[in-house]
Image (cartoon, rainbow, N blue to C red):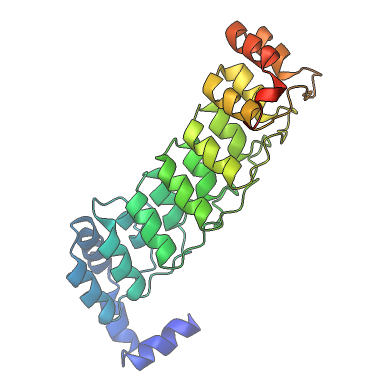
Length: 256
């Protein structure tokens, strides 16, 4: 708040003027301007001293997170950040604008926020990163690629020890998996049950992802904490074609 007071002094605003600026009606009007894409009005309101770091009374969202859900978020996001919106300011439920942009599968919003300096490694209330959400939400593969290219950290785990690579395999996201492996994801990493990504493919009958893992040299003999190999897990799950493919995959095919 000290910082804000200093900025307001520079703008020659006193406390009374500030209160008048930040009425509920004014903040609601500001959100309406975002939803209707009125970039110039947003810039003007910020220039007058309106602080764009607040929560919508009804939804708990922030101006930045609301902007990520619009059709053309680029100029809105730039206007808000230029007007003082903080890139790591969170919604009431702990998400940053970058998390919301990923959830909404908006490549434009994700790219714009990264260009404006957002970190791809912000964590939400569950400790998850935007790139993690990109595989659980089944986004456009380009969304996860942009985040990975911007040095997103890999190996983040949820409460069950599932990493990004496990989630990609569960959901059959071959292109995401390819990007994750290219950027150094651990293809033999184990979750809380000791399952590797190949085990996850075996349970969920995800043949394309299993092929990619085998092609990259994933360990077929890895045991989970029930002492089962991916082949055995596939048999137990009734995914017999996949079980056969795992068992018969030739090691000389690896990495060719």
